[in-house]
Image (cartoon, rainbow, N blue to C red; front, side, top):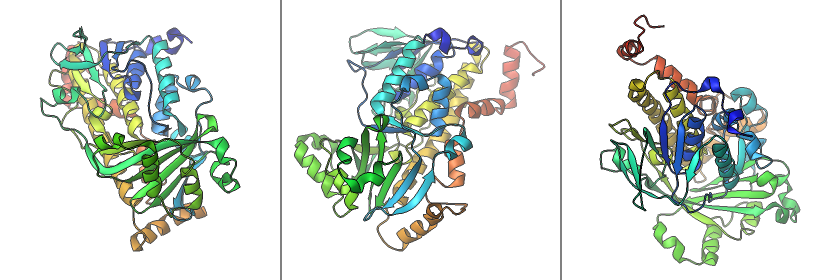
Length: 455
């Protein structure tokens, strides 16, 4: 499959730019794909000596998958993705279902897109292959150490300088570009006091234990919730691997974590879930290795676009969030789609600053709300046993019993939250904001385009 078959010539942008993207993670590749599809010349700079994605599983919710499928990603994912049937909330001590979100067929029917889970490495490789097919150039082993927002240009650790019409910083939580955009004073994401162990277990090993049949018999997400802790699980790699994310309180310095032996880390992980559902602890005992990640969250930044309108941030660099809505990477995909759409709406280069302002305004609102929703789940899931926990579980009971409900503390099921989260169309929101911008702006744009009569 070549670029010519992936790019619709009728959809190319009127103003085509030379664009540098810093960071070849999921967000950077999403931006590269979205912009290359519109005819822009895209070069991605990545500091790593080879492209790879660490971690384990990742969820691709409908608001993201709708865009990715439109971009042509599905063939590149092959048989690696899993489409889970539902999400089950389970009581921490015995695994009894206390909440239920039906994904099949509900999400496809309601939001016109499936809900996937996949190994991060498989997802990343699919994005990389699609980007290459679209003609994106990727420069590895190219760490960017400084930016000039006015030229605009980047400088690599090897002393090389590269210029473009627009530079996009998608360089993660510890972004080098963010302080440049914010005028020299950084506003980094802050630690939340929680961390997550990420691990996978071989499904073949699980098959040796009959009591685990329910948890692997069909594709599904299972979420055990308890006091200050939760465990999210689902199968990935075409059903061959059982992905686990174990969230727990931890205020220790992440710099000290690597000083502990693998055995000590595993012992510590298991101690957090002593006394939980015996089936869950049996699976936890099967974990051979794990990675521990501090969970951080940012707050709404005052701007994402530098005053020069030639340098911007997106993805985790702009809106790090805890993974409790499973929307972190999805927000970066939305950022990318929205940016390509905003640039596509201009008729001349003079309109680019206005388009970037519209993009920035729409995306700051959307992502800051998602940051908040993610933190809310951290509250809802982590109640200690007691009156509030019982009230929460009672409010989710209709889902489990198949009865009608109009609200739910389960944000995956709550109808209003569902529509806001999964029914969101990043491209349409940009179009709407562009049409609703100030009349003076529209008038100026029409004069620039030589059309004084408007539409």
